[in-house]
Image (cartoon, rainbow, N blue to C red; front, top):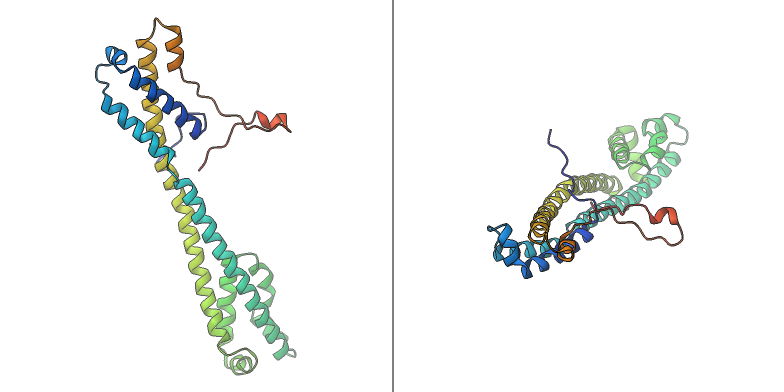
Length: 241
């Protein structure tokens, strides 16, 4: 089974990209010195590295994935509210029309409506139940006289819309890990090159403490700033998914 791709750095994405951007500018100015240690290093490689950093800085797939999930979830929620209202109307008329027939409420599954109100999957099953039972001869004609014209057809259509919205929500959620993995792979590639340049720089400037310091990497989780809560101030910053 494939393993989950993780970041190969501990700092935040923004800090990693900022660190990499700093190193690329240093490397451009020090290219001739760096080439004495690593002759295969070229200006073109540095320019490509710089371009990759910029691409990562402008990568909004995380926001797009979250937005897609939010929109899909809101669609499910809106349809659920609509279905709840329609089912409330339906059971009102069932109870009024068949007040003397306790079996009707049972057959229409009224006991399950509370659970259905909390779950889109159960709501779909509940609507399927009532639309099926409502077709029985002993119920169909009497309900048609009480319910608004086309009510049962519209209820069935609402069920289909809710089901489609759930599918879209599921697609949005299952797409996010793939988007996240692709983004992490790009960010890791940038960091790998940054580490490579760091190692080259520390050798190239082994006789200069100040220059070596410029090529050092400080990869540590960023602390959240919270002046009102010292305990939170030391907590590592969560990475975007």
